[in-house]
Length: 89
Image (cartoon, rainbow, N blue to C red):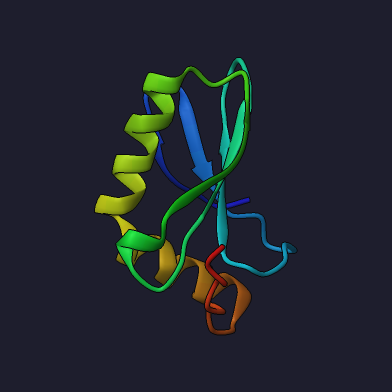
């Protein structure tokens, strides 16, 4: 699993054999989280989390937004297809 970057002790990764929609996994010492990445930085959203403190989730979310282009390009390079538009609720 390629690590894109770290936020403190938390690794932000993409699993090679994963599924749409495009998303990132957060792996750390006390828990995990998953963030969806859409076509723009405004489309970053938390999908699930367990054991990650809210201030850390905010820091990670901000880093994903700041590095959105890198994250999206990495997803496309690994999975070889376009990012599907997510339907808004």
